[in-house]
Length: 387
Image 1 (cartoon, one colour):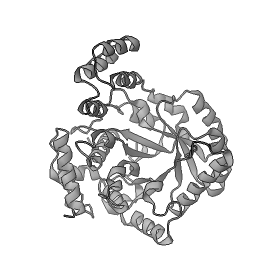
Image 2 (image 1 turned 45 degrees about the vertical axis):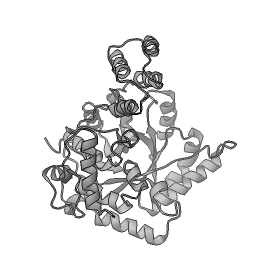
Image 3 (image 1 turned 180 degrees about the horizontal axis):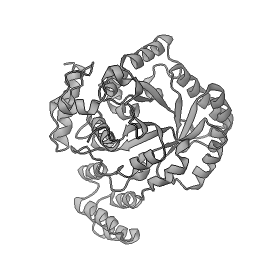
Image 4 (image 1 turned 135 degrees about the vertical axis):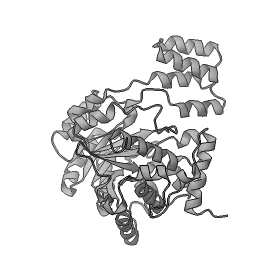
């Protein structure tokens, strides 16, 4: 039997609620193509009506922050053909997340040279669903084979490939991975200036805002208005990821007792070496030592440290591994981050980036739609759009 999109999204919401112990109603997973006839929570998440949506979730007089979604978040649903590119865009519009970050390598046919008809269709979807192209997800793939690492010119050629495609698709910004070689980034700047495209390097864990790499990148950014940073909210993780922990327990590689012991010891600032030794003695599972390392790596950055470089930030990844029914992220607390963004004058899109699929695939394989909606509700609340 072939499921319609409406039936699929409804079933996905119910399955997620059942698998994760929540009480998600079918209505919460039901996204109508035109955004009408929503249930109460869907209307709450939507906000502005489509006719007024071109501004991309209108900023209030207190800030210039807009909301969006990194299409990376829908990767599992797209990969198994449960959602098409248009389905993803329609869903984003339906929840009022109008800033689009495109995962081109996965979602653009015949990448990097899509047919003209598809490019026209893309622009048609953007207009139809009142969206705004916000960012293009770029991957340098500097080590494509075991015997050759890209040299600078090859790296620049790869960047030019994506710059040209972004231009065709009307996307003004590109996100580069934090691991992109600095010499390639620096050599790409003249091309960014020529094509009037902005590129931001992702500030992703475990990189520190005050670290040497950011200092090097900042020197490039100070020479041009076409280069800067894309902060990833994962750098503000302040608690263990419960979706990862529960997945490891279900897989039988971490015992519940060991998980509880590790997290309690971390919260009470016990020495990591002593905790690892005790976990080894208690036979907490083959991955228990890895979980110790994972938890003890949690050292959230100070969100106010972004303020001095905020003018260099034009896009943000709203990382999440999942949220509860209360629309609160249990691992990444943004209650102090959003005020810092507002104080620093951030003018751009926070794009929800859901990465929890890998932790719940065994119990809720299609969790993205509901989790993205929950994250958007949380953002609306923190941005003052709803109480």
